[in-house]
Amino acid sequence: MITLENICVSFKSEHQKKWFETTRTQVLFDINLSIPKGSCIGILGESGSGKSTLGRVLCGLLKPDSGTITLDGVPIYGSKQGRKLLQQKLSVVFQDYTTSANPRFSIQEVLLEGIRARQRKGEPVKDLAAELSGLLSLVGLDDSFLSRFPHELSGGQLQRVCIARAVACQPEVILFDEAISSLDAHTQVQIMDLLQELKEKLSLTYLFITHDLTSITYLCDEVLFLYHGRITDHRPVCTLHQTTDAYAKKLLQSILI
Amino acid sequence: MAKRFWKNKTAVGTVFFVVLIALLGILASWIAPNDPYAADILHKYESMSAQFPLGTDHLGRCILSRLLYGIRPTLGLALLTMLGTIGIGALMGLLAGYFRGWVEELIMRIVDVMLSFPSQVMVFAVVALLGISVQNVVLANVFIKWAWYARMIRAGVMQYREKNFIQFSRCIGTPEWFILLRHLLPSIAADLAVLASLDVGWAIINISTMSFLGLGVQAPTPEWGAMLNEAKNVLTSNPSQMIFPGLAIVVLVSVFNLMGDALRDVLDPKEVAK
Image (cartoon, rainbow over all chains, first blue to last red; front, side):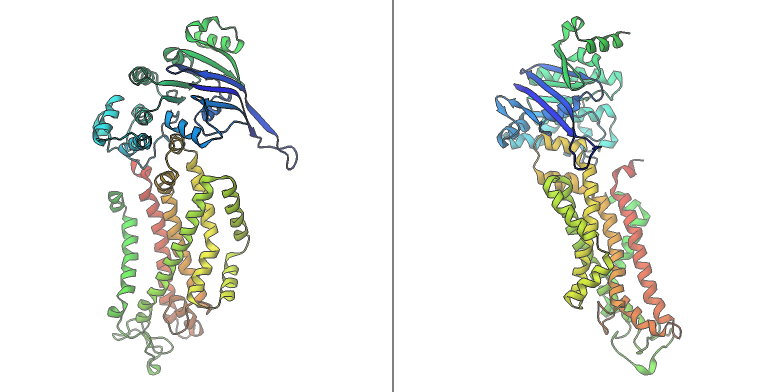
């Protein structure tokens, strides 16, 4: 469904040695990846490995230096049509739930933004109130939350609202940028169960960016190791123990101990 | 929002005071005890009395009446200046902060050029160039001051631009006007309110300064700065002629500055959460 070919990304360095010099630091090297429909792929890497940059490239917010990324065969950078297609099919949930929702919006308005995205696709929404409560019940919250504001919700509740908002656009792919790393272990399990349920109900494709191997083994089919901007290993989760890559081995060991 | 506003005593007090002053100015022709233009040379420098509550000036005109009539040009022109500067500044700041790229380069280089001139001197220069009149004072103030606000608002916008809720909106293709008007503008509303009320204070002082120097509101029209100008010749012999307009300016400017602080608290939802 989504294919990445030879993606390279670099940023201009902050400290230039000479005047007017433009040294660039490369962050992603030659990323090749294909994401089939209905899969759940975990992208695993330590801080600074470029996994969030990869996420930004995937959601259409950062144009790579070279390489192509196509969605159903349409390149998403370079043409307005491709960008629009991506906006219709991809939704995102971020790590930091404290800034994920506009603090001036009530939960109702937060969710409405997602529903409006669906209306732009040309799908009529007849009963807004029913739609809103349907979304909330989908993530296990009730209607009393609609009039509340983000700062009146706990982290887990707010993250559920963010998931509901992501689902409200009726996407085919949802990108989770460390979406559950900042929650406590119990809430993490709850949210992951919820995600699994949603995936089956709505036949979604998940992309999971995280530094937490346990949550990947719990949820994903395939895992991708990113180390210093390069993909070092890509294998199904069930054969994780057979990994030959040094970095992946180290990571596995550090968790088992 | 309304509930938060009524809870904040400073906000209610200052807004009430400003509205009261504005009403006094609007209703000046009914309230004022005397005609502000009626000169009566026989009663000059009179002290407080029932007929002239704050005494009379060097031409025997009632100081209270002139103060009341003076609210119109003082406050009206200051509000006009504020609307102009904040309007242009907010628009430029929003565009520069949100779109980045060449739009930002263009706007911010113009802002840099504007900021490299000392503002007070530039106001004089512009007024001297366009001719001495009230409109030109307002125009000059707007023209010189918008760059300050554009820069401050851009900084605020850039801070919110990278926030996740904006990233989400951009990711799912929310129209740009929605992001600018519903996400960014309310987010910087608190900063805008502070800037706006501080700006009114600054504009009152500036317009009064121009009138004091004889470049703004012209002689017979009552304006607080112009009244100070008329009073400066008799500063030692009849200080009360200077005290009242001076006091009025100080109080009104302070109230606007206080209002700025109070409004920031009212508009910040997290302040209430504590």
